Image 1 (cartoon, rainbow, N blue to C red):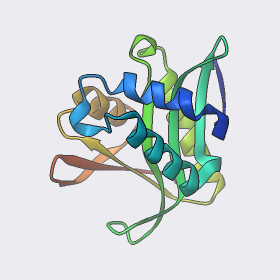
Image 2 (image 1 turned 180 degrees about the horizontal axis):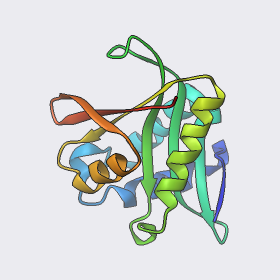
Image 3 (image 1 turned 30 degrees about the vertical axis):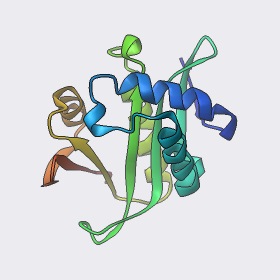
Amino acid sequence: MKVRRAQEKDLQDLVEVYLKSYKELEEYSYTHTEDVQAYLNWLFRRDVAGIWVAEEKGQIVGFVASDGNWFSKREGKVVGAIHELAVLPEMRSRGIGKLLVEKALEYFKSRGLDTAELWVGDQNKPALDFYKKLGFEEKDRFNYWIRMTKSLT
């Protein structure tokens, strides 16, 4: 397993990973290729250095879009935001998601940030359990989203 920074040339592969990873969770995702492309372009503009891909045998099997420039209104400061974590369904439970999140947290620490934040769908129990195992705590809710944070100190 290799983890590297994403490049703009990876965009189409990231779209495919995103769409496959959100099968049966469409209420929390974009479902049209053009919308996913626009979203990923936004993520690249937010913090191109914070997008990491996991590759196995030269194929992208997952990615994390982290943002070291995110001002959290709820925290009242800049935090490290994990905007997206996507792993191909057939590649789950192999430690890929954990590896990608750990890479994002290392990135946040290297930028001097003390808090990581993310939002997860309230009915996405596997994701909620996954983030809790990694030390994230539920903080609050907005509609069907749960905000979770983790101290980096």
